[in-house]
Image (cartoon, rainbow, N blue to C red):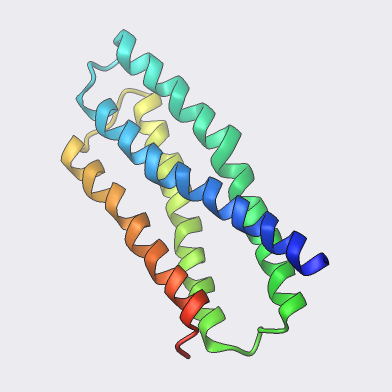
Length: 141
């Protein structure tokens, strides 16, 4: 029963975190095109902050906690696929903090990146998520 509950919590946390990774860069696409300090820009700042603080950061923390707990229950620490997956998850964590930094540039009205740049950023999490799913389900190594 512990395994099923921890696995369920881990899946919920990962899905929540990924929703943020797919939505926040999309908000930044719109924000990059918005007039700095305009009404639309100010609304997007609030949306970005709430998404990061209310969903993404708690989901990131929960993903790591339940993921480590799950790997311990399963006894898969020696498995290579797990370490590759953890490397990708570490990359997501770095990306999380990078996005938080980008939010600060928008909050200060100093963003210098284009909407096209954020459209490209928006594709990276989807590709990485596909890799993680394949590693977990197929366990090729």
